[in-house]
Image 1 (cartoon, one colour):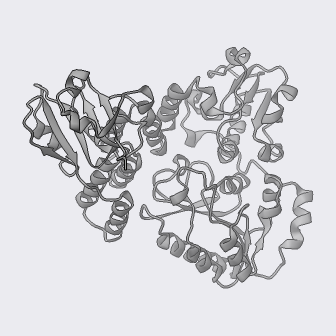
Image 2 (spheres, rainbow, N blue to C red; image 1 turned 180 degrees about the horizontal axis):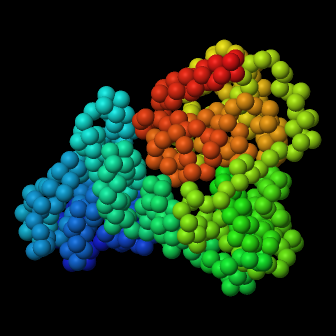
Image 3 (cartoon, rainbow, N blue to C red; image 1 turned 180 degrees about the vertical axis):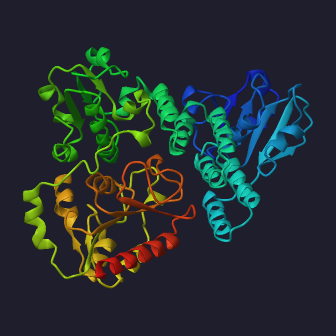
Length: 512
């Protein structure tokens, strides 16, 4: 039976490879470095633990960042084969990551051999981290676990976001900024957006959005599936006076983003814009038409047919680049979206007047979201805990439910309202009949905030930038109160307990 060859990559000259015995090389499938693998010193596009051996020439610098990244793509017990260098020592290289690599002595002075030690599973480290957080372990102990996680997964943003949260909680933002710079140095452009978002989430919108625009400015296909035609590039707004001018705000990113940034229509009007036009994704087109400061809404699928002459266009995230006034002091309209009165009246029959508190709920978002594992609540025991609360009528505003979720709704006789909704005007109409919304970070929360519906948002430990690093409030929606997970985990005990307490308090208010 033929033994499968072990995968290897050559980032060195053929002369270096010639130092190895033929019998060893015959066990390998050695492929030359290709651009699709990532840069030679990072291999950041290569799958983790996918190689048995890497041959590296000494024309590359043996930095800590490079060693970590090369070790990342090696399988357990794989070999990092370095050409001897006069600029360092093998003992110093091992010191970069002593828990990952072992230096193996050999007879050839031209070759330094390092073997990757068996590593823990990342989920195991995450569980240990969760337990240490719950036990209020000393910060150095927690940071040691993050360092261990980072050494195994050096291209993951998880340790950096976590350190930022921990350092910010302790009023050490400068150290967090230095940590992000290390992330950028290691991962290059692929991590620049993470570093920029860390600036925005800290509340420095002016600096953060300007950096973001420098990174994304002309990358239209990354910003929207329906980019402006090249003939319109000359009309891109760069902060010019809007008095008497028309401006088009182009569709960009998710539904929640578009709902949130629609708030800035009021600012554009206050700057004298004669006409504000919003290009939006289909599910929110009719909803945005209720905005008093938006003169026209165009479906992103109908741009060619409906877009008339205009003076300027801009992406939503780009607007704040050209606003010198701090966001907290901008004129705002609250609320700025509303429901169709006819549609709202037609739905009234679904909300019987029982005297109970009427609460909508969304516990899970789009499963394709990059942070869905921590953003959504997948353990239905937590949701059932809420459903057991007395004197509350629950209404499910989650569009899609799986079989287990449907069974839970049926068990507590909870209406699954959103399953038949066609667009966000239906959701808006339902929200008008609720006392509160309880939800994870989804587009429904943004809609509730835009409508001024009192809402309790359940946030993971690492949150999206718009919610800020800490606290109950946010810069965008005065009617939304944040309840944050105290740990990086899929456990939501502290949040559910806080929501229970908050709803009990609100029941008391209603009774009073």
